[in-house]
Image: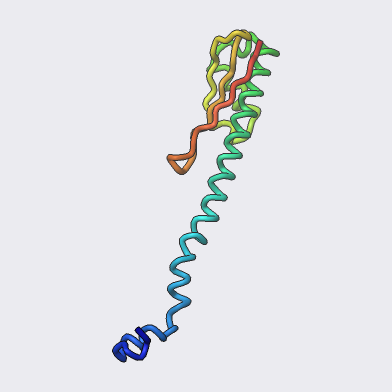
Length: 126
């Protein structure tokens, strides 16, 4: 079937190229919007992971260097919060018994998207 056999209005519709830019933009726009959001979310996840590592390292050091001042989770949190940044202060710290003595676990779970997994870091504090 050739194009000449189609009704006139259908031939005009098939050869009309006005509006192509709008259609192409409609296909590309979601990607252009999602890409910066994905980069931002991954950056926040990376900063959260670094904050969890930093908090766990500082808490483990506190437990090893000053066992009397860091004898409870509350005291460890206070000590770490005094000497760290705001992002590190959002990390949940927990002390757990382990084979190495005391393990400090830092968890950063403050992410915008539900699908992003929480960052968990475990440090041994002999």
